[in-house]
Length: 377
Image (cartoon, rainbow, N blue to C red):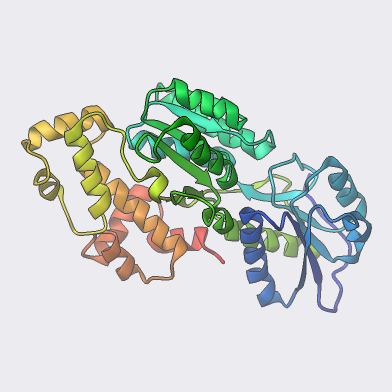
């Protein structure tokens, strides 16, 4: 059944409650997206912490709510308030409300693909708790590894993680359920006498600027498009406040990509020639290089390197170069305001028109449509 609220929208400036975990990086990104939408509508936004003790007593004071509920009790209070609500968290099942959330299974799959493309064969997923989004990210990670014929270990405590790291032969890939969870592997490696990223590569989720300031070495992370989640949630709330019917099916927002920093800035390929080629491609994909430039770095014929490259990576040298260029282009499209000709050049293409043709063939959208879809804020 569609979700609808018949409560009339007040003629004065609407007051919107944004109730989130105001410590988390995910939440801060969502708030930025909400306020981006709200500014154009002259909404008055009040941001409150999800754990505020008096929170549930004042829900009816708002014209609409965007919430990151923390407990079943809060969910019941929200339902009883009869105020339009949009949920922005998959931490709890909230099927009675409209929801705009991160596609957490896609987040996990992206993390697995990222490590597989770098040649890793030993994997750990570190889950700091058992919330729903953690389980979904683990499912995406482990399912993608299973499809590739690999398996992953799961740890939930620092002690278990240290023990598991000590039992595996490096190189090892560890994905944390979010950036805060990824700090634990960084510390566990110190305890276990392992180097990051040489022995263990560590990947987080959410690009939390506060956590990033605590991480050493700098933490690679998956960008979950938090601002877009907030923006889209506000757009859904506007419809609800106007009395429109809204589908109860969640809107899932895909992650925009991986931001590579020092904690994963290495490959785990056993073949030194292929590893050299991959490192060169990753370092120079934003330049107008081709396969001959890669061959110049390796003392092999093209036929020999292509054969070894396919055995190790599962695809050709040119395909790896193109994949890296597409990753870079998608990141620039979603995280910068650069014009398309500038993005084309920064992604290794000499022509914006050729870049657009290749991008559409590889991604399924034109660069402009991709930017509009993933960066509406």
